[in-house]
Image (cartoon, rainbow, N blue to C red; front, side, top):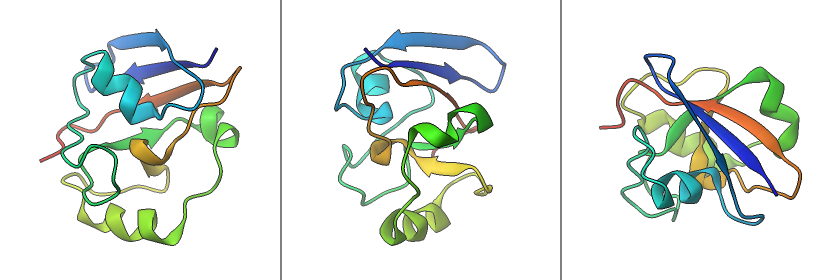
Length: 106
């Protein structure tokens, strides 16, 4: 079972068990995690599920593809080198990952 930790701007953390095959965004929305708006529902047509992938979690996910990279140009908070769209971070069995949510999504 994958585990994902969401770290808010105030450094509070929520750690959740997730379902393999779900995305970091789907897990957040299903569990009411603040900081993930997900206006498009995961269809890769907005940037309101922007997260900062913690360095110790980078290897758990494939590199971003071109469309995700393009969508990250539209984030409410400036993108960083570790920016990802959480709808594109699919969780596999055994993955333990951490993401930080930005100050705002809109």
